[in-house]
View 1 (cartoon, rainbow over the protein chains, first blue to last red):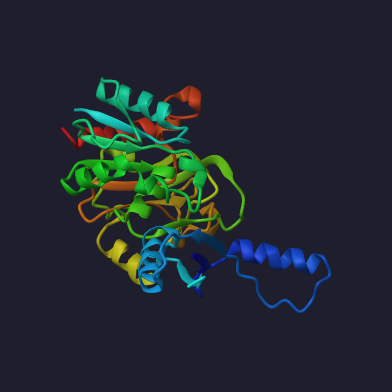
View 2 (view 1 turned 45 degrees about the horizontal axis):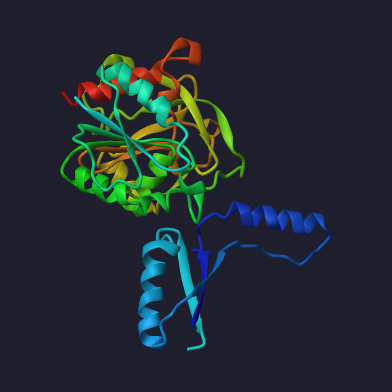
Length: 81
Length: 230
C-alpha cells in the first residue's frame, strides 16, 4: 500500500517561500490570493498489508524524520488500505 | 588534546576546520567518515559546514540519522565538547542536541559575507573567555538556512539559562534588526546546551583564521575553546 504524507509549516511559523509565491502570483495578475503556505508531499510505498500496522510505521517515520515537529505538522492517507 | 572532524558527503568546510584545529591544538585532527559508527577518542568533535546529503528533506536532517551521529550524540551526553558550525549547527538541532531549527533566510537568499557578532556576557559557553573574545568579532557567514527559530518559551529559557552564545551585531556591538542578516529570532547566531559543551553557530570561525583570509577572530575563538578543554 501507499502512504501519501503531507508536511506543512505550523501556523505562526513565517514562510518566506510562501510569501514569494504569493508575490509571484500577484505579478502574474492572478488576484484574490490572501495567503500562500508551501509544504512538502512525500509518497511512500509500503509492503505492509495491515492498515493498523502501516499507520504505526508511517506515524513513526513522520515523527522521526519526515517532519520536524518544532515547525511542521504532518498528515497522511493510506491508499490501498 | 585530540580533536575530530566529522565528514559527511557534501561537507565542504571540513578541511578548513582541520587547518584551524591543527593550528590551535598542534595535532592534525582525526577526520571521521559519516558511515563509521565508532568515534576515535576526542576531547572536541567538530561538525563542519557544507551541505551534508545535499540538504535533502531539510538541512541536516539526513546527517542527523547517519551512523556516526549516534556515536557523536553518545559522546556529547558523556560531556565531550561538540562544536557545530553552519551545517553542523543544523545537524545538532536535527539530532535534538540543541533546541530550535534553522529555517530558510528571511530574504530567501544565500548570504556569503562577513558579519559582526558578540559573545553574550551571560553565556555559559566560553565562560572564562579571554579579553580577545569580549569585543565585536568578525567572521563570515555562508548559508541559506540560518534563520534561527524556536518558540518564545524556548527562547526565554535559552536566554535565562545563559545558553545564547552569540548574537549578530553591528560594528559597535549593538544588536539591531539591521545587523541581523537572516531573520533569526532575537538576533541569535549561536547557542549551547545545558552544560555549555555542545555549541552550534552559523558564522564560520574556521574561515577567519589568518589575516590573509580577512581576519583571525575565528582562530581566537577556536584557541579559547581548546584552552577550556585542557
